[in-house]
Image (cartoon, rainbow, N blue to C red):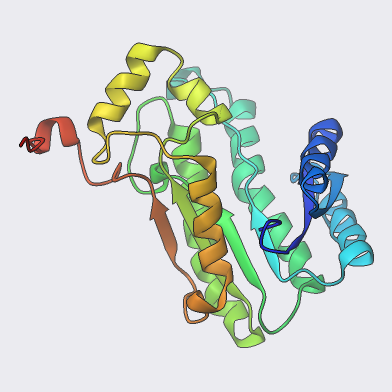
Length: 236
């Protein structure tokens, strides 16, 4: 988005990482601001949005992408651990969007939540994540319903396995597991972070001006079934 001319505020719990991301954008002549806030704390999120407004004006695009994950059988997840993931993913998304509603451009703003295939498909060792992401999907639809009259579109993106992300470092910690996951994908590869960025650009531009309440799957076909079992790879 910065490459397309957007002024970008990067907000993260780790101030150093947020600043580094903003520095990387500025290094290629973009306009960026690095801010620190924990999405679990509404007041901190609201303060970061006020700082964004002071620097760049009312936001046109708001993306909530914070997430927590640690693979574990449900019987081994403590109540605190379960709550932590729900607080980051679901409560955090609500905090970001609720705070952004007060300061965003209306009409015309685009709000985007990052969900996951676990929202629809149960997965072993992911009970906490599945519950949190399912909540995000329903939150997207409810807010789209309520905030549409104000001119705010609310959508979600459900990424599949993406190269170089913290999530895949946890879910595919070895080359063997990574190869197994790729074999199950229709496109037989992991996605690139830029491909999720492109999906967000689409949902935020005029081409998607009539799209709201939608979860856009950008997952290489990961929700279509096990391609290694259900499909034959054609040969020439």
